Image (cartoon, rainbow, N blue to C red; front, side, top):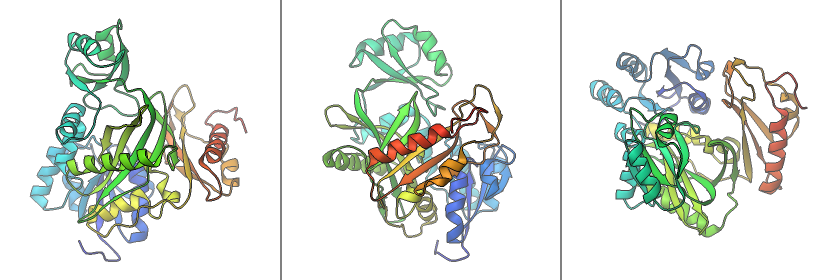
Length: 391
């Protein structure tokens, strides 16, 4: 698809914050965005047109394709069979490919695909019932396992560590694996979690610098660039990430999550076939954001460089309420008063406990990442949805 301004229209399955940021990045390129989402006035609707419908509704996906020159996704709940059928009917290109989505949607299939391709992953086994889980706890290395539902998990949902003596049936129920099954992975004693945002274009590949990802309760809280690790680990992580990218089909951005082990090895954790929370730092911290790269890649346009401009830290703004309530963020004035801070609001009307509502990025060529991280944490503590703001 040759670049023109005004450009083509990009259809996105999903209208959450990733769809919103995709539309924001597409606009300067002359690309219009239409999103498919079942939620009225979804976050992306503030900056893009919306088709109302379920992510896996064939009729809704066809309606999206009728308004688009190319289709992509920002959520893995899209149905690869529906996307493939719509592509066949309409000849509208779909990227990343439905086959890549099929692989990613089932964590067992994903692990097997990467292992078969020689990409290093933690040891894993299929788990269908409590007896299988008991065997996994006894048979895999270490004192316990990470139990993962094969489908549907995100932001810590669908995952939990399991140790000897736990109630295995209850653990399976907790991760929601009664219908779709699960897998158990060896519990990795990692030094840190890291990520690479990989990009595949029409005939070129890019990888952003290694990102350190800081999680709490399985939810990403902060990212740090450059990652606080050795050059050797950073280079090995890049190699593993690009090998994983070679395993999947289609153009676009892929969020590639990795473990750096205590011994300095790198293991693949999971891959998302879309822009990823670990790449939000690229909006201010890189020469071109992951969202701009995704738009370029999906349309078959030349990719931009994928280089960091300066040390960059991002912290997520999560819901700090006990019950759902209308969203009203307090402490914004402080965030806006810091010259090197950038606040991003996701346009969600309701705040829920630990729901991702926005993020703050700090970038400064004259600061090191520890100082930036301390400043980011201070700003995050002052941002609250409660009435008793600590400002």
